[in-house]
Length: 95
Image (cartoon, rainbow, N blue to C red; front, side, top):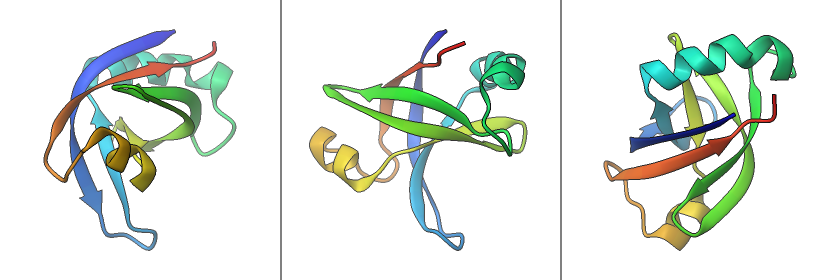
């Protein structure tokens, strides 16, 4: 399954501060449906993510009925992304 959407870079200050992009409702619902066959625990879903010319492996985190895409510093730097920027995200989920 491949999902494609636009999302805003947000910051979460929790115990492990990180930048994320929230997966929209429609795509999150599709992920929730696929979760039983692809999740490795706690609802996390391994994916290959792509923003611009940067591709990396990560895991989506469930939060409030949506999923979050972690966007590490190296990806933000390579793509010139700042907090609040909206960017196109492609997720490849092996179902």
